[in-house]
Image 1 (cartoon, rainbow, N blue to C red):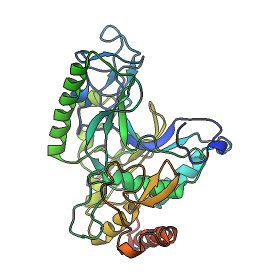
Image 2: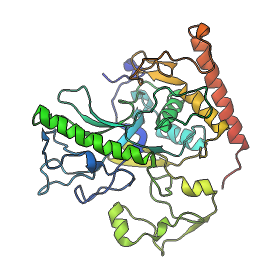
Image 3: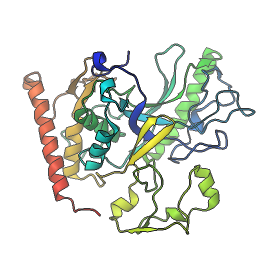
Image 4: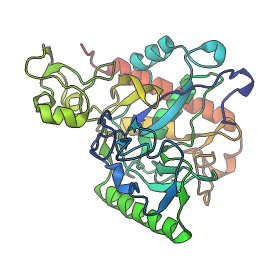
Length: 380
């Protein structure tokens, strides 16, 4: 059973979630696929020729453009649905254990949830514990336990996902809440390999692709300004020249972009806003996006913002015990070779008043967020 917050009051399962879209149109995939990122070509970790993999479930490849259908493939034809869930909402019906859509939109547009510029990189391709397994692209935080006391230490790779996850879990308290396998994108289900050697060779291929991505470092996903409905924005002004794309490029992206004849909406934005468009999407299900929430917590992440980030990361949700724990002691941490401490805490008091300490951290974070929101210049 999924590790939902309150199983007895989670009445009806659903698929709505907040997360990232990794979909990308490809001539190898379904013609209706849309491009939401160009940083990573996930075909680099697929086996479309079935050299290593013998069989899959009916869906076939979920990413890299999806499944084209006959005559190019004989799995269920479907567009690319590559995504990473940050919080599973399930349904928009409270009586079923979900959250009303209106409540989600109100919170996400209020500025209460700090949405950083999403810049990530895959950290591994793995087989999950299922039999036969699902194949997953992982986006783990690295290192798992940051150096909280060293202000000069770089922020962890993929910190943005845990940062958003923790805020959303703190804000939304509802029975069906959980995050499936934080943080991954499923690329294939029920993977049966041709042999042990074929399995070894497939993962060697994946390791090489991930190594190449990691050498390039973290990358933004969505790079175009989008409106609340998830469509590419018609805003003009000092925004990047994304509107000058040709018709051919429009087709490559699988969605319409404003052209020169589209009525323009003039708006002046800051330099950071003009460059930072990598936010998060609200999905009704993996195939259907309904809303987009742009970044509101922008780089550079200097000392003041870094303090907020590290305070949020100091906690980790444990899906086995359904409670907050210090970073490094929850179910997200795989390597527990060190004994994590609450940042700034002394070893002698690490077990004393832990709940009180975590509550104090949360109150401090909320105060800092409120202060920054009040200090920020108003935006049109």
